[in-house]
Amino acid sequence: MFQKNVLRDYELALFVSYVIETVELSKTYSGGVQALKGLNMKIKAGESVGFLGPNGAGKTTTIQILLNLIHPTSGEVYLFEEPMKGRARELLSRVGALVGEPGYYNNLTPNDLLEYICQSYRMDKRTTTLRIKEVLEEVRLSDVRFKKIGTFSTGMKRRLGIAQVLVHDPELIILDEPTLGLDPKGIREIRDIIKGINKEGKTIFLTSHNLTEAYEINQRFIFLDKGKLISDESIEKIESILGESIIEVEFYKDVSPDKIDLVRRISGVVDVKKDTNHSFILEYSGDKKTVHAILKEIVNLNLPIITFNPRHMTLEDYYLRLYSQNEGN
Amino acid sequence: MEQGSLLVEWKKDAYELWINLKFEFLKIRRSSKLLLAIGLAAVLPLLFYFIPLLSGGGFPDNAGDFISQNMNFVSLIIVFTAMLLAGDIINKEHSNKTALILYPLPQRRTNILISKYVVSLFSSWFALFIYYLFTAVSVALQYGFSEIPEEMIKSYLFAALYLSAVLSVAYFLSAWLKSPGASMTLTFFGVMIFLPITVRLLDIIGIDSSWIFTNYSTIITSIFRFPSGQFGVATAITEDEFYKAIKVVTTSAIIFFLAAFGLELNKEA
Image 1 (tube, rainbow over the protein chains, first blue to last red):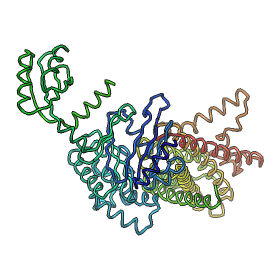
Image 2: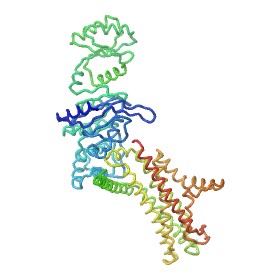
Image 3: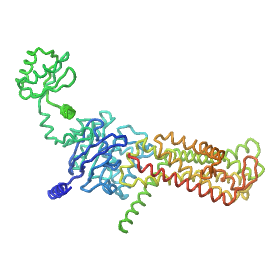
Image 4: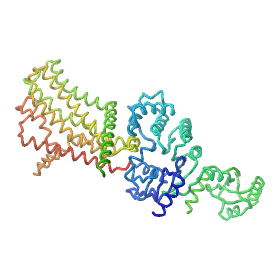
């Protein structure tokens, strides 16, 4: 605890402001399911962080704790450098959040809902009217301001969700799967809006299953698996990894582990990872000549090769590599 | 906590209560439920007035019997209104996922829950008032204004109290059960059938059932102290019985309300 305080004071001295900080955050549900296992993370003001992981990784649980919807079994949450315990109401007034796919009151209009939300954040009447107008323009819902939400499409409801997050001009924006269930046009619209918010310098904490989306929006990526943080990388680091080259190799029948070991020993091959039963991902270092040499060696080994596809690593490859490594551990 | 900061907290809570009362009222006003409850409360007395008038079937001989006939359906109006306005008031926020909008807002959940109860209570009292108002107007039209008994006010006040207890049951069930359909159904059948059956069974085996509030629904009509009429039974009640009824019904309303409160506040969502 002493060490932590010293660190926090030191960081404050450097004007590093943490908007979110979790310390050994754990959550075990009543059924015994351990959703979070000692999660430690810090998010700086102005950062745009992608909080990624497979289903059941603990993403939504973390968000629900951050929003005081559920309580942690142990550990602490700090928002804006203040402990959340006992001060949630005050601290959450600086946060805008869209959790999952919320429902809407079908008989109300966007104006009714946003007015109530502005009142919850204690905004005066003049600012409320102004902000509702601004924010509905931003999410392109101005023309349906007084129409019942029940008549809206899924995409319009999601845009209204974004408006609801932004209407009180929060410092921290938490978005949980903001494009889930949307068609490609809807996804593009929401993504563009979020990118716009990011440019305003607000802190964004976003969970998504869609890696492309996270990659487009965020500058930092926290990967979670089985309630634990398994990787925390900046976009620069991720981009350097994505520069790495791989070859997709497919065989028409099973290949024994001994043969795969021989492939692993080919000059230029860095690692071989099993993708499916018949296909493998070869990580290599070198140029086109190296690729040609690897192909020749595989043919010489008399392996039943049917596909050989050299390409750069994608974020999906990185994600799968990360989780397969974690599985191995 | 210092006195000053306590005052600030109270002001915050009062403000939150106010905005949530307005919001809940807006929600109920825009939904068809309040209209349905008021509609039923208005239509029933109108039917009892216009059907004899149009069919020539004739009215009861005196205002007392006419009122007695109308009051036989007060319990139904009460349960129907409570079921409609509070039977799904909490669990629907979860099943429709609107809780994901409400609960992350910087407000105490208690203020949201109190507002919900208060708005549904006042709305159902209003629907009940319409029933009494239309009954009184029917009496005035058929038997003369002077024939409207003073006991109607007393009956209304007791009916409103009884409605509070039924509403608390509905509120409790909506906090306890996940499915809005189940909580609404159980509100209706629980108050109309299960609790009266329990009372009867307890009486049979000689166990005191006077603590069950449904025992006292008949007081709504008994208050009129009319002799046995053409359409219903209305026996006079003693003052002691009346005050005991008030105590039991009030206590039940409070207990069910607090139980619902406790359940919802401890819910993780």
